[in-house]
Each structure stands twice: as C-alpha cells, then as structure tokens.
Image: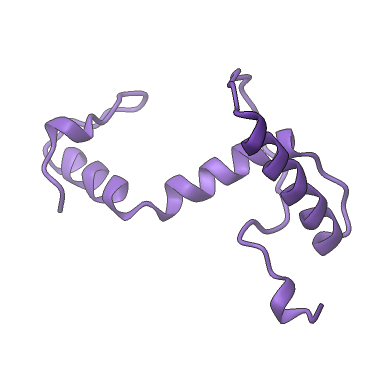
Length: 95
C-alpha cells in the first residue's frame, strides 16, 4: 500500500481531557470500528482500540458538519447559544 492511498480520515489521536459516556452499538458497527482501529494502528504505528477512537471520530464528524456550524452561528448571532445549551435543528432554519 502506498503512503498516499493508506490515509484514513481520522489522523493521529491527541491527548485530551475526557468525560465518560456510555453508548450501545450494533454488532456490525462494533466489528467495523474494530477493523478501523487495526488499520489506524497500522497506519500510525500506535496501537489504539475502537473505544479510544470513538470520541475523536465523533468530534471529526461534528467539526465537518456544515449545517451544524450554520445553526450554531445563527443561534449565536441571535444570542440564543449559551455554553452547555442544546441547539435544536428542528426549531432553526438552515443557512
């Protein structure tokens, strides 16, 4: 595999402060996450399991979600977005 073709969407995992959250996954999704973890470990040279990757995958997903960003900007401009508040996409218009 050439270096250019072995790039995964999720890069090296940074060290971060954490909060514990419990989730339930389908057997199929857990299996795919385990496989992703193996490939990620091979690509980056550091062993990592699927559970350690999940928060980083979710953060990357939210960071790339354009509609979410637009809703946050819109709510913030209206003064409706406070730290810890929930943005309800159903009550906002998309930009």
